[in-house]
Image (cartoon, rainbow, N blue to C red; front, top):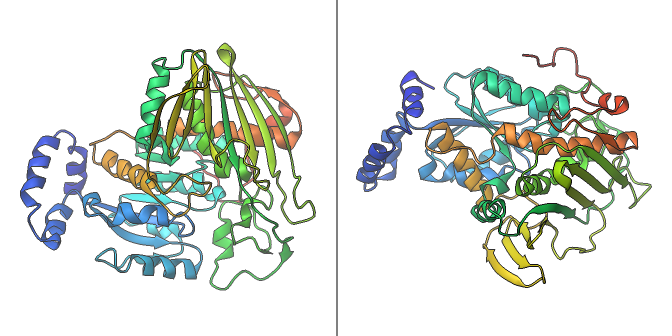
Length: 448
């Protein structure tokens, strides 16, 4: 970013009124002239790292003229992903982004302002730390960390480098969720005491991994990045890295529970739990290649007798709650159901008191294709960089919710419950603390 643009963005909030007047005066200009005038100062140059399933969630926010962003780079370790992404943007933006496989080269560009991080889980914190160290703002998809130590690290880097870091739990940008949670905090259902967060899917069998050559065009070494090196196993690349051990993924807790647990924690207005207890196992397709649990119930007990219960079933689609995902909040005077489509408020007799629904595109169990929440979340990221808004999901808040998923995974792996320091978030159990961090490929460790 040039010095002029940096100063403009830094001072943008102070001059918001004048900027609005300026904007209205140029609305009648041709689009190209508009781009040239605004682009001189206010434009944000961005890169996307990871061009798989989440790419669709960024297209609308990038192509809209009001966002005033310039897509400099498309980065992915698979050649075909880069090429597909370039074609996807061909008719949506006026320039041709540079295609690159190594994010370390991308962040060397001093004209680059921000990075969207949408890689497999093990890359999230290391990639975000690299970007912040290089002076870039970061939109960091969930999970924001692969383990508790990285959770601490990504927050520490943000504090040190003072960059804008938005965590990709998009429901924090839902106007409906924000509205009802504010009402909950103001006592609309009395004193809250319990939340049930849930996720149900019908994922099928996955092949048993076997040693195989990496897919054509895949930089397997770079895919592994911070993870210790090992041979490629079929069918790791095709999303199944989520279920093949802990080198790359964080199981369904990091994959989807992040979203619903964040809403539950936000609604109950709690931080770290005092106690964590988990029941989990692999109960479907027991002979396939899936290494993780596919069913989990987790209970998080907080001070003041508040509790969050997680109910997750990845491969049994029985519709227990009437929806595929969401959060139920219980209070002394009523209850609320919240999901990406809105909310429903009930009294103690179960009578519907108020309901607000939206016609969005992100209400189901998948969040890959993009939609209104993803667009709003990205735009909030852009406008915070300019100083015009505040982040709806700053990393310091997102990381606290992410810890709930790490606690549950650790409890599942060691096969027992444990106590937590509700102030610091540290676990008291020695066996659990052995999984606080991970092993890195030499040279990939990040320290402040």
